[in-house]
Image (cartoon, rainbow, N blue to C red; front, side):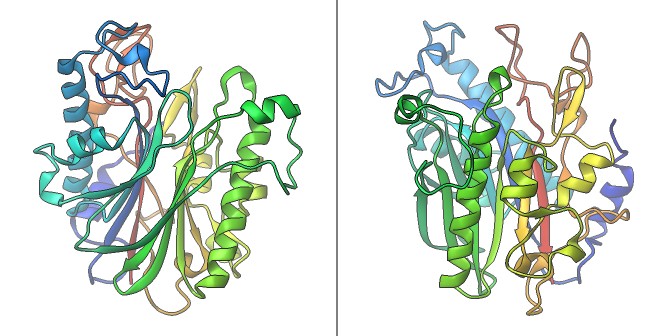
Length: 355
């Protein structure tokens, strides 16, 4: 399943990212798999991540988790030569765990700040955006809740189920990058547990799409990246239909469409997570028209290899389960309820911007 990364490493280390030789910016996303502290939050159902909870979540385990996630971010920096300008995260409990993460020695030199808002998710897991203030100037941020009002998606929930529905809000952060207007959306769309939620993921995608179209009207020419654990592949209805994600960059010729770098990568055998023997890319990054091809000559997506791809699914041997039933899959934190000291059940993804 895995494509060799030898050529990619040589390409990146040489600085040949498919754009010119000016400064490059890395934009990424990482589902960090249950980054919880050890403190009880009475407003959420975080009991399994307490010292006396099902996972026996101790301070030592928490610190191991922080170190592991920071080590992955640092390894990506070693590959690209620069820390991410922005890095979207999913499954973080609160601002406190983000403060601890950005203080980890492996990544403290990046000087990360972050944008985070508590969401209504019952487990208390949120999305967030890490960013480098020396490269990205935040102007404003907004949380976008799920709403069943005015949607064109056929939602199967009853009125009572809609009333009790809770999930992660979508985060939008707008600012200036290299003097240009940018907006980053970070999402963690509803789960596939029980084979359900397709309509809710489509609703989330429609919500992002409608909000982004309004943003483009309010700020003409703004460049937009949508990222997240979509719990869908880039070929699924939520992405291909409701977010207007196009597999070919040449098909993105107006504000109506987004370019989906990971569609062709999925078709070519890449994956960011594995489930029952099948590889998927749920960790998706999309670029709007103004970012995909930069008609104004500004920052745009760069090719990341010699095969026409515009994205990276990042992994290194230390992030991969090396033995047992799940050998060859992401080395996760728990297996069958036992703490095994891994990193995440997802691999991070990223794209590179340049001129």
